[in-house]
Amino acid sequence: MLRVLTPLLALALGAMLVPAAGLAQGGPLRIEIDEGVIEPLPFAVPDFVAENAAAAEFARNIARVVAADLAGTGLFREIPAEAHLARVTNFASPVQYSDWKAINAQALITGAVSVDGNGRLNVKFRLFDIYSEAPLGDGLQFGGSAANWRRVAHKVADQVYARITGEGGYFDSRVVFVAETGPKNARQKRLAIMDYDGANVQYLTDAASIVLAPRFSPTGDRVLYTSYESGFPRIYVLDLATGGRRGLDDQPGSMTFAPRFAPDGRRVVFSLAQGGNTDLYELDLGSGRRTRLTSAPSIETAPSYSPDGRQIVFESDRSGVPQIYVMPASGGEARRISFGQGRYGTPVWSPRGDYIAFTKQHQGRFHIGVMRTDGSEERLLTASFLDEGPSWAPNGRVIMFTRESAGAEGAPALFSVDITGRNLRRVPVQGSASDPSWSPLLP
Amino acid sequence: MTPISKTLMVVAALAVAGCSNPDRFGSGSGAGMGAGGSGFGMDGVASDPRSVAYFNQTVGDRVLFAVDQSTLSDTARATLDGQARWLMDNPEYSATIEGHADEQGTREYNLALGARRANAVQEYLVSRGVSSARLRTVSYGKERPIEICSNEACYSQNRRSVTVLAAGAGV
Image 1 (cartoon, helix red, strand yellow):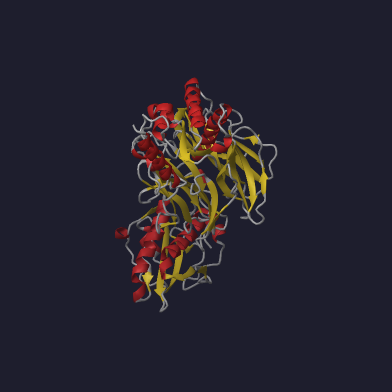
Image 2 (cartoon, one colour):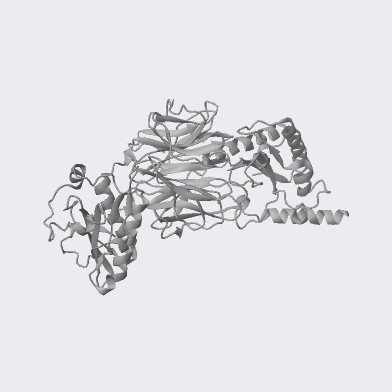
């Protein structure tokens, strides 16, 4: 696994040990995500320096992934290598700021890679604020197996992103989703997992049964999902390390779906339909004890815990059309928080606790939106024939969701958008895909 | 049709039903008995009133619903009256009632809506004398549309329940 090694303190450059966030707030190299960025910040990432022959390919590829991560946020713009005046051939050499200033780079990322005899990578990097002519934060080094070179690159990019935006990173993360093939009336669905950027897709189930809506555990080690393998929708939990899985709440005559972990990872909230009525239940994974949380003739579904585990936001049509409600995690009186026109569904509490993402259906269009946890400041981020199922990036600043195109040839794809509504982009997954669930930041 | 060939056909239908995948939409299962399929071969022929094909096509294996609704229209009730009579006359069959929704709506809500629709059909059939032990319900939400266009012509066909017969008197 990867781990952060000792910072490369003051290596050659006499960098001052200033906390990254503090330095960023004072200097010009700062992006405020909440304000929305009109002009992306120009940066340069020359190929990392290969410190031995075995590292040559990694040195180039890691720099490319770092650049793709940063440019993919829409907050940064890469100045391509052809425009560079300087070449970085020695990680320890002083940076010629004027060379980078001349091409209007505001941030410079340099790095070096070596591979030891056991196939382990060692990657060092530094971030420079060109206009301040100073490093931004300490140099760091990461170790990892060569097979995990993309993760090392994502960790470097997460550091850069965090130092410049002041937000947590999200590149070293994964997404579970449903890979879809076949025509619209006979879709084959398989659970799959990939890196956040669409790389390294692996399938977790075969296509023998319909599977729906996988959800990561808070530690990223398990996945909840719904499968029809018994002939009826039922919730299952899959252990990613062992591949082992087990059905939860196997009650004849009922259907279970829309599961989600509590922040402690020990409880699951889900929908159970019995006799045509759908309510919310909590299951204690250790004891198997099931607790009914709602008891209404209306539909209660799509529950999601607040990050402190004390509240649950969910969707209910008790008012006549689906709206969003919040109740104590133990059940009890719910208060409605969505009051705009249209139908609201699939609310998901941000991991930072500040927003609730949702699906909205209004006048024949679907939207992904965010609102404050009291329902105020509703903001629609997308609009299309069919957008649904938002999932938060680990830093709570980006949302991934399903967008399905219309018509007989219609097919779903994964898209992401940031919480200002900017940087809408398709996640590059081969084939059709739906129901993304973003993992926490990997350890 | 001679009595002998009729017997053979019932046997064939029972044999097919006995080996079907629990998820009739799973990749291994092929078309189920109630998929509104050929009406020929394993389902028997529609001219035989005791055949699955007759139930699917002549009685009608499905009823349709209005947007977001699970109430039964007069047309739906008439179809279900026929289903109930057929099930009473053919006690060797049980049925799974599938609830389906159109694609306008979230996946989770549509699953719950499909459960409502399937239950409405089940309750009606029970009210007409069919033993509840012979009926099960399942919701497919919007996962299995029968028509694939994205307008009301297709949506109206997809907002449905389908009564799928299986061999065996109960569950």
